[in-house]
Length: 326
Image 1 (cartoon, rainbow, N blue to C red):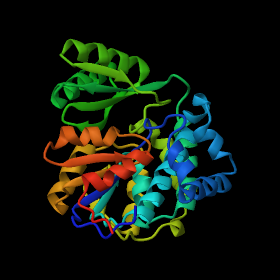
Image 2: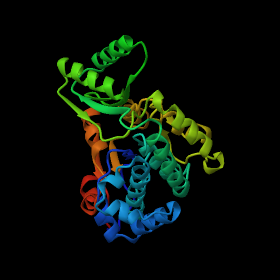
Image 3: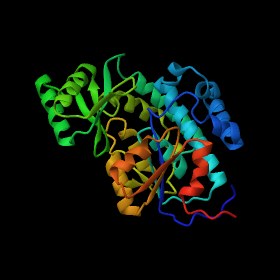
């Protein structure tokens, strides 16, 4: 699969976040490429746990524990990135990641190395997992309903409770918004939004109300843990979940990775800004799923998007992108 330089450079690399995990993710990539196995071994050595067993085993419960899920997804994404770098010479114009995926984007951009990103995501997952008591909160994806209707319903619920207990957490696409908050209030909102005309509602498999003020303690704990010396200026523009705008300076890297824990993910805006600011024509999702690729098709139908999550999808790059074979 030796190739020359990609002709069209209007490409962005994007990295998925929590929820994209599944047992056995990346199996054929690890089986067929030494570069991927090296990343897996480095992850195990860094964290002192058997990442091969966690990722390729059959213990779904262990994999879905947030403190395990986050470094596991990062490991699989970086393994696939390492293989892509070996097989193709693609020079993206910018990068982004959804929530946890923003760490993958930063590793790719050189603003933090894989070793420290592993340490941080392990702690991040632990702090987020333990920020609230079990069953305290939940998240739900609302599909096919205008964002203003969703915001109005949440505002009414918060007003009746005389406090903010439910929030918009992810603006994923024009037809998908995720809400997050106290379990009882999320259930109440889901019932009301169904009455308002939501086409589908899906409770997400997460352990806490992420991307809300309920994660303030987790953010503080992570801030205390992170060392500024672990970071540097990025060599590629990264789009922030918090602002939906690009950044590359070290201080912004640190601040945005912390702020995203309590702020909504502005994914739809980020994608549109990548298209507008960098003329991105193709998004390549690097990680264990094709969730982001599907969202992008909803955000801009004229933009190409596909995922690299297996050997077969890796080979499909030659057909889908203008690459000259040697």
